[in-house]
Amino acid sequence: MKPTPHRIERTIRFVFLGTASISILVLSLIVLFLFMEGIPIFSKVSVPGFIFGRRWYPASSPPDFGIFPLLAASVAVTLLSAAISIPLGVMTALYLAEIASVRFRAIAKPVVELLAALPSVVIGFFGMVIVAPFLQDTFHIATGLNLFNAALMLAFMSVPTICSISEDAIFSVPVELKEASLALGATHWETLYRVVVPASLSGISTAVILGMSRAIGETMVVLMVAGGAGLIPTSIFDPVRPMPASIAAEMAEAPFRSDHYHALFAIGMVLFISTMIFNLVADYISRKHKQAGSATL
Amino acid sequence: MKIRWLSGVLAMFFVLVVSPVHGGSIKINGSTTVLPIAQKVAEAYMKEYPEVSISISGGGSGNGIKALIDGTTDVANSSRFIRDAEVKMSVERGAYPVPFAVAYDCIVPVVHPANTVTDLTLDQLKAIYMGEVKNWKAVGGPDAPVVVISRDTSSGTYEVWDEKVMRKQRVFPGALLQASSGAVTQAVSRNRNAIGYLGIGYLDSSVKALTVNGIPGNEETTLSGKFPIARPLFMFTRGWPEGDILHFINYVLNPHKGQKFVREAGYVPLF
Image (cartoon, rainbow over all chains, first blue to last red; front, side, top):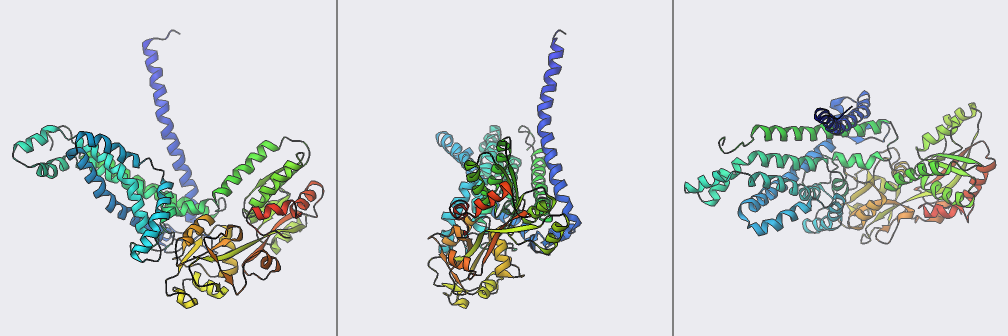
């Protein structure tokens, strides 16, 4: 058979289809595995009992499988870290894209992105050894391993994501928009918050949500600095145990295919579903508010 | 715990690498608490007697004993004594399980070196871990909140604490759970109000060991049975061991051979 252009074309198309399918296949197999290992726990505890149960004693007899304190901890840590990282990340992005000189930007942007390259265990160690004793001594609290410390460390981790993606969005706002605004007599500041920010809002929102979904799934940092108490937090200085920390701490020694093992996988399902919702929302926003050219604003 | 994972992987590696050797083979299964001992002793044993191959897996005490009853393992590691029902089941299958205590596990409560408390009773420890005692003043210490540090509920260290200190009561949810002995040491040494507990092999100068009911936790008090937070660790065999298995058990119990590695693994040797 002589290779004709048509045949080559078809072969190449199949090769690319194959490579693209591999990641989809792997993902669906992992999800399938996750659900197969997680669902059996619901024969022991009801879905509302699992999600809203206040006690997590998986190894006691009789055991209690209520993940509400873990869920509340994950939500609290993520929200608090978002409250720190969103202003930091977005304002840094605005500065870099609109105000900073080209030379400063060329140095500062890679440095911010390098923050993302710090392994999470290093950030966790920093939080445990430096930040925790500092918090203890400064605020006279019982323990520095708490919700606030974890949120702060997670904020360090999501700032690069938020900053880098929003900076791209802000930078790609068409220059005519800015010029028009300035030509109408608006100041630089007015142009920034009346024109540039609204025009890049979809990009910024995507950045924020991706940053938060990184924070909710992060394991090592919360395992090391969140404290690990299975309590619903009542103050930002309470020790907490977010879902990933529980899975990481207990999975290694939970007997294979025991109720405890299945319950940990079920927590994994809850985590997966929440990050998936975050990503779907990010996708939806970026699609709905897509800025196509300068005409649609 | 990472280390236990790693040793599991190493054990599998051993199975793959060592099994082609001719001669006897010994299968060991059971408690992950005993696993580090079995691991180190088996390594030394196979170095000395390369004709015998040993395969080790750590599936938990219950699984190990079950495997012994089923005859799928030669030696069952266990962090608890065999239960009556298990003995009965085993005898019905024609094998009388024989216990060998190979080491002791001793768990010592620790506080920050600056803490003035030096001794707590078992009941005080229990009250602290149930969340009933919230201030060090109540147990003769300074006027400061107690920060309770515990281990994750599936660890062997927690198991001992649960059995000997908590006695059917649950550790209250406000306790800070740490995933490894190293993390407990870190957390206690950096918090003046903290209390935690460690296996005797993990004690160092960054934390202060407490006496319990006036008895210090050390090798001597563990072996004499005076120290209350300790338990023996076992290897069970199917019937009185013979051949390679007997030779291996003797090696484990030998004060100059196997028992040396017990201390290395962080436990109390028999002699």
